[in-house]
Image (cartoon, rainbow, N blue to C red; front, side):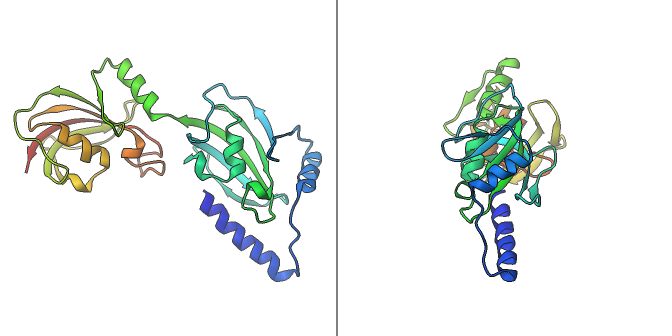
Length: 263
């Protein structure tokens, strides 16, 4: 999202400067006029960010290092929309956003909605005020979600240093693969709510472990041939915050697996 907005602003400012001799930077006075014209009950932070909370959330409150899912519409003071999401939103890290948006989202709780009026120095420092209408859909906490799933399903899971959780339901008797091995695996992949997104046939699928998501590269070598179990993979070891259809950004992936052979 940051790159998209930045590129749009370059085009926007270039078009302004090509037809007019000067570009007049927007200031706090312009923000205050916008607030008055729209009858907003806005609050100002010490940094100069103005915000309006239109709906109080009830969930978790993010911090500066949080991963979140938000839906938003970004516009300029003249009402021109420069970027927006659909209602399902996008997953992102707060520390990758412009300062004003990162700061503002920390004032919200999950389910909260509102408006940020971001001065240039908290945006792209280019003289343009950004208006962001936003909803904080979710604070992504894969670890907490995995632990809840483990507890709810009474699993005897272990955690690796990377944050991967695994369960060995059946000890195999064959060799263990390495991270470079070719293996044949029977598997079913699903989300924490039980929705299945992928599955092999009963004969399994053959692939190299250095050509799959890192949760598999690390997780499959925990099993011996003939072994069966479960991998619970956080998004940073799978498809990250971007996701890939049908995997949404930030998703935890659960796999039932049986290691048929190390080839």
